[in-house]
Image (cartoon, rainbow, N blue to C red; front, side, top):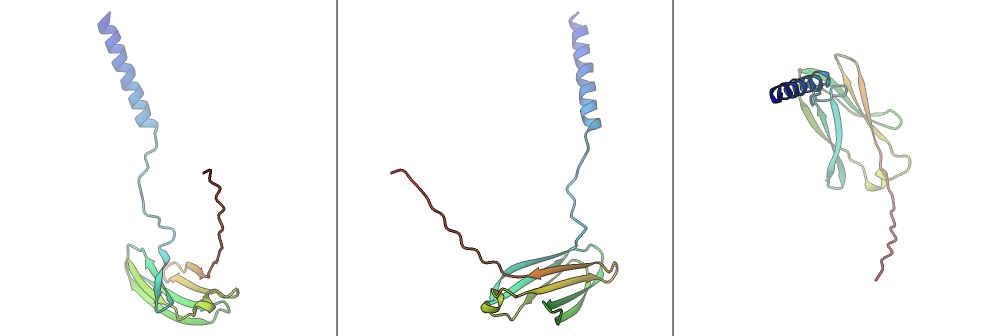
Length: 137
């Protein structure tokens, strides 16, 4: 009788494990491939903002980078070729211009292969936070 219960338990446990492992979806951590370009603000040099553009492409390819103002006037343009590229861009902008309400600079990255364009708009946000704290003494 004990042997029958042991065998039944083992079969039930085996079927349960098989069902759980067989019916669950396996997910793996993958790199996001829909947008290979990334733009970050990395600091200031001589009070001018510096941005880092990283292109996370596995295969060598060509990309066109252009920096434009809000009126679509091109300040700078270049063609980048290779795999896993990164470039730093320092913009010659005063602090007063950067915080002005009508300020806007955009960086456009276009793939020569797919003609897909990614646009990054650079603007400044200023916020004032006031916290009132009540404490029992």
